[in-house]
Length: 351
Image (cartoon, rainbow, N blue to C red; front, side, top):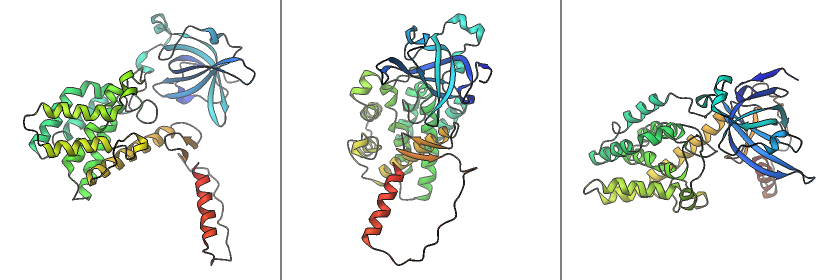
């Protein structure tokens, strides 16, 4: 067993490490093993990353006084299960102010954007309204940012899948806005003003759907209404504050927000029906998926299953063995049976 590591960032954990430190408990569920014994299924996070954790029936931590969203003091052994690191928790309790002298620091625990938040805020306010041409949309952008600037700096963009940390919503919006400018430069027929306003509003409803860090959990209204509808409502509120706001622009912006998830089964009440709506959907999808892979690349192993993508990804191909292609003599087969077989094989690989 490796020597005990005190207050080591979760990102640095390795199999066999005996660790002790402080973290934020983002999940706590009581379950039973195959023999009917109680155990706790936990997720611990700090500013560097997260780790799945288990409190088995023989651990003193099973009866500890701590709950989901608490800052906790813990100790345990890092093990590997199904190629993923997992913490076998030996002790766990709610952290107190007295723990400060032992290294407890909330600022070092709450997951946050890797970017400087003030710098992100400056980039946001350079784009809005500087990259928008129509005066009425410049005003809409400026007043919206003024109204929600503080929340953008603090809120995550999601509960778990992507940008799920302090400043995540601001990072996501800035990244998408900068990408939207590139897309609208390339596709001249796409209205840059509308895409940029769509970017600003598309996830603004997350402010009402999800609590700010460190809780980062769905609110009751968030579960019952959802960020897509909240985002449309917030747009209408801001438009109503501007006298004689053009009805056609308001309608198009409503459509961008309502359709940005792309498909009905993903939470959009309508599908993208304009060039700007389609572009917004794909910009959002690209930024969120690459953020998932970027975050996965900070952990081992190189091959990981990402729930948000519903398939395995390689975060690196370094050190992977590459087989030589097998030469075949029959290149003439093009039967539907062969095509169906290839399709079935690919489907299995994507699972």
